[in-house]
Image (tube, rainbow, N blue to C red; front, side, top):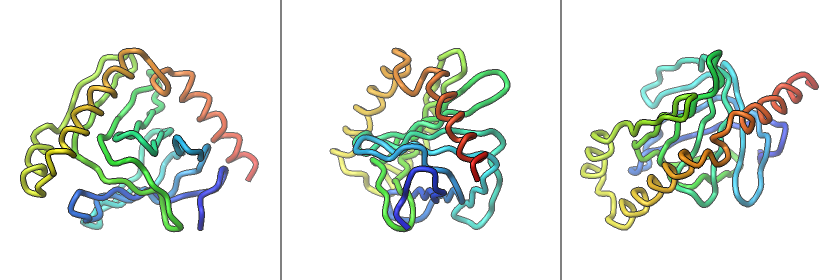
Length: 177
């Protein structure tokens, strides 16, 4: 099942030790090119590694980059669009799913553009337990700085109109089915 625009896809995140972390049961592909894969979903089932599951509350649009060490989720809420960014390996897709390795560090961006870095203790714990190579840690630190600069500049996708445009495309695809 190769991914294609307008079709559903599964998203899988892993940890550095190759253990499964989380699965998003269904997202719809909105773009797939050399730079990134953009998907959207709403009320999708998310399955944790321990088998527990939950459903997303708000619609979202996610940018998975092929050459950046993070992904960005634009979350559509009544009070505006907020963002959740995961420091991660670049995304890859195969016949099964879009896949990436989650490196714990996250950045939460409020609708007003203010942001906070989350899960630094979890990152340090896993870095030590899973023996992240020094080169990987340098890449993650550099990409975290890059991500923060993108947020400050309000570069795509950190503008509400970017997420709103993709969400409109998602709605259109759903209506055509």
